[in-house]
Length: 315
Image 1 (cartoon, rainbow, N blue to C red):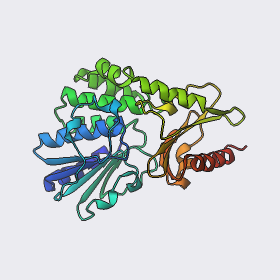
Image 2: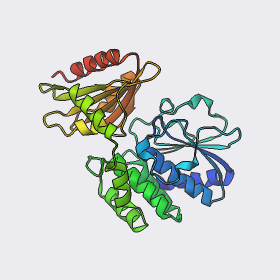
Image 3: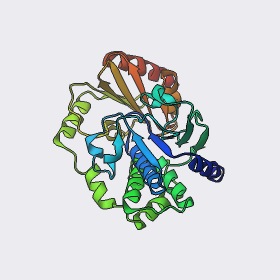
Image 4: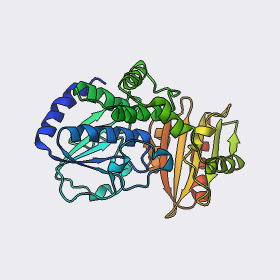
């Protein structure tokens, strides 16, 4: 994280000039997005700033155990002088981005390799496991008082974006940050139980549907499944469940949404770059974890993406 120093100098100027802050994250926010955003919000509040954490999405039931979720607002305030984007690689990843003022200061804090540096002030660390880890480093550098609730948020953010420390984005610094956050009071055991060991029965119904529709191509080493709109939603990541399958290195899950949209989650266990694969479809993310939103029916999305995947994996 070698550019924190230069970012922090400009950040001090941002703090001096700004009083009304809007914090924004990506569509369908995950735990890294929510945890890092809410932790930063607590810091800004401690400095006497007026803040709005603008999240116009419905939060997944599984995430409702996170601290400070009551601070989320679906309404964008009329007056603000600074917008801070967290965990957003580009403006297409921000819901209703077109409604944000462009004549105010924009700060972009992210760890995606395809970030477009759209802020007036940018801090992008592509080697960071998560924005949660970046936030821990930032708040430590700022000598902020990190409360147990803030530590819990950042720990959960790191744990989520590393697949509970299983993915290749884990570095020694990641374990160091997690250990320090535990020392600061992060409720690790309690949150692990709430987030990962308290799934409703509908989650297992969803797994059943996913497995019944599972297609495996052992020749090209990929697997995919489709989740229709009618399927129950149980707060479980099907793509991470299927990635446990031996003999496949690319995993795709198609989830039908309302308004004739399909969310496509992609994972790669080896060298295949799913972020580069997703880019022509307007998607993106990380080399080994990316997403796409496709207009059309579930079958249209499946046909389009799998046809492209077959071509991309042809030797």
